[in-house]
Figure 1 (cartoon, helix red, strand yellow):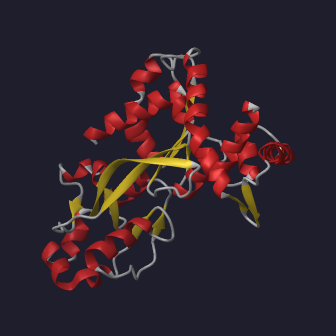
Figure 2 (figure 1 turned 90 degrees about the vertical axis):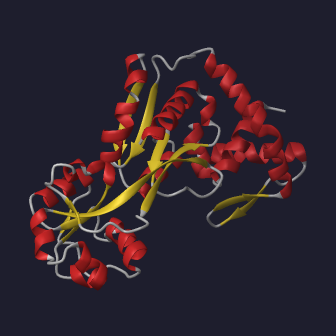
Figure 3 (figure 1 turned 180 degrees about the horizontal axis):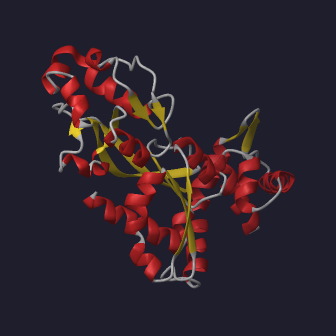
Length: 298
């Protein structure tokens, strides 16, 4: 049986679409369709059910994928490992939020870069990053949501604690500070300017739901898609924000105040995602392993 047909079959199985599989393989959609039809004729059994939005495997297709995936991935690893045992001279493409890539991920990869690994980055939100990974525009995506489906494989990377912060003058304006918030809840913050990375206020919404058990009622006064810019605006006195604790070094010197210290602080989980099978490539596997190891100290 032709290995190229099996590789195309496995890509379609993982991608759930002839079009997405073609993009990953560098083939046109008609070529992918033709190869799958050829394989189905050889097996005399249908492998996929065609639907309006992609395909789903038949029972035969599921069984074939289960049997061939480990062997095809192993062949890829054997082929690639002879080229690049140490990831030297190869380039890994990363996608993730700007502040997390800048302050966490890229510094962690410095030793690999010093050994010859190339790194290219794209900044985006979770939806954009996972879509880019699925389409083959990047090799690894850092996201705050676990991807669905079989095309992408995700590993929990780390948890970050979310903190409600403001400049000292805003804490003073709230009167009783944390005591006032504990007594009145989110109502005490209704007229305070809020800052976030998107109009939907994802971080404040998560915090409000987890701590106050209520949705955010005010609109964002400042929206900027980089948490470092949100932090600088908060330090300048623009209002309050919910930020990951690792960004809040200013809490130590008093330029920033944690407005509340809930018994169970809200957490946000980061996932390290790759396309299924690509960890067989040494430069991607080594980058993935390095980030998992570094995250134990984050």
